[in-house]
Image (cartoon, rainbow, N blue to C red; front, side, top):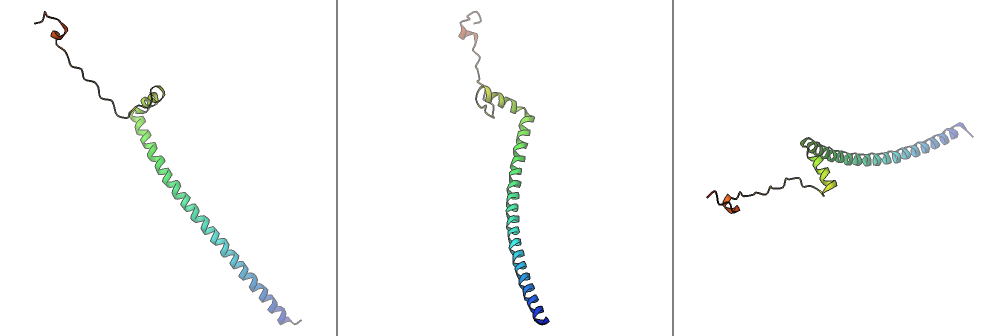
Length: 106
């Protein structure tokens, strides 16, 4: 065989290998891009969840600072869930001594 035929066969094989390699790299890059998009959405969810957790912790911290958390825990264990707002006090009216039958003060 002559040398030009050897060179042509080499260039055909090298060209096919290069094309296959480029297609393989494109497929790999496509899958990497899909994975990165999934990671981006997962990170967005984690960020939103961390904001919710931070808000909950700030509310818990405010409740602890106001002293209401202990009364809520005691109410939870011993009498059901206690309400967050205080119950109104019953008002009592003072009766005069007349209503008790004390007639010396008339």
